[in-house]
Amino acid sequence: MYEVALAFAVVSFLLVCGYYWRSPAFSMFHPLTFYLAFHGLLFVVRPVIAWERGYTDIYRLYEFTPSLEVKTTAVYAATIGMLSFAFFCLRVGGKPMRFVVDEAIVEERRRLSQVFVWVLAICGPAAAYSLMKGYGPDAMQGMVRDAATGFAINTQGVGYVTDLQLMAVSLCSLVVWLSRFRLWSFVPIVAFITLRAGTGGRGPFVAAIISAGLFYLYEKRIRYPGLKVVLFALALFSVFVSVGQDRGASIRQAMGMEEKATFERDRGQDRFLESMDFGNLEFLEYIIDVVPEKSGTYDYFLDNFQLFTEPVPRIFWPGKPVGEPFRRIWLFEYGNPIGMTRSLPGEGWYAMGWLGVIIVCGIWGHVLGWIYSRFVSGSQTTFKTACYLVFLPTLVVSLRDGGIVTIARQTGVYLAPVFVWYWVAKYAGVPTAAQIRAVMARTRTRLRPGGPEPEPAPRTPVVPAYLPAAVRRRRALLLRERAAPSPTAE
Image (cartoon, rainbow, N blue to C red; front, side, top):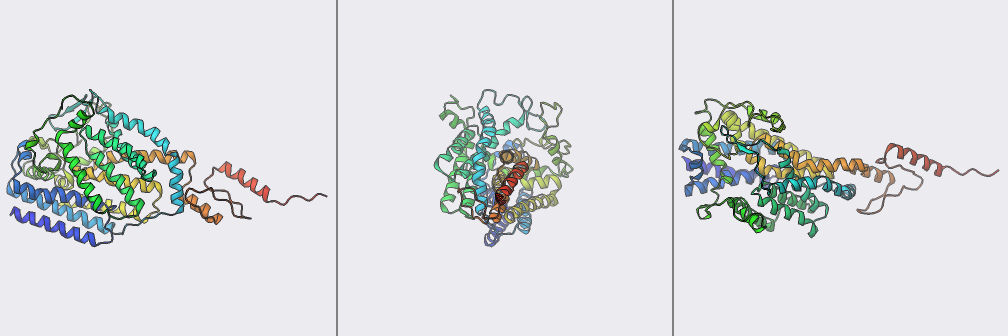
């Protein structure tokens, strides 16, 4: 019975991958690529390995033993969620990837890169402070694990300060892109990867690498990578696993920041893909085991109200609810699901069972497909491209967590440097691609990338539209005076 479910999961995954690969929408820039990579690893490959090798570590930690029916239901639920996500994502975002680059966009990017140093000056110190704060002796000060829910809560500090280091993801990838992938531009991203790995966190530095890779593919107009990039991804995966084994203790020791590892683990007992980093199948089994047979109810999407309480720091709201403000189900009453992430199928089952899986995965697929379609069909200006290629790698964490709170909280921090960049450019009067294109059309001048300012065409005095209103009036008056015939002497 369980073997049939695993076979169904494998066949369904291969059929969807085959259809997607043959469709015009297939590319590294499509959100379905990220979901299939996530689902294939955690709900197709790993379940087969876990069943064959008899992985039970997470069951012992969570203090539950799923029945064969629960295990079978979990595999079917994850597969139905994948089919729902793929259907709605391709239904809305079935367009082929399109690269929009012209002289105006290239010139816009050149001018915007000149003011990007101000973005680094504004966001860089805050991101560096937040990152290095994780190495201090008071890094975990104020973090208390709530006994009722198992969540780690910040009782003394402000979570926004901790999350500011996520700005380094977009800053590092944008530096690489704007510097046209020169060798020196990789120094910040290498430093960030090293420091972030030393804290034991892996999601952000993986997102930084993926974001830089997407910028490279976009710059070269490549829809999907070649063999070299695939091999690099496998090497990155090995680094991810290695960092997870000791939570960055070996890196801290190598940098002289720690004399003795504070997190020790018998690596001889580690088995391939058995750790909690890849345990979303067991997490889903736990949810199905509890909801609704033991809990007696579903959540009915009430956990999404955390989106309204999450922005308020606990230091300003001592009585702030831990996690969901209207909790109907206490998962810790039935075991010890510490560190559990629900993923999209788990979030759907927690909310409404089978119907919830279809709704949650379908809505995520529809929304992400719509975002992709808007980007592909749009003008793809510098800011729009930066936002999309920074946002897309955040799915690495968001799809695994499954909650709307995660993507809302993290996306705002990831995109903060792009928003700062926009306002700095607006204050500095940097023209947009549309304004540059309008000037080029009026002056009938082709603007070479990096070339001089376009000169007004003969007999057609033109005032650039991107100048301030007062400057445009003075410039127009001066042009009229110069164009007026000189009075003849009597």
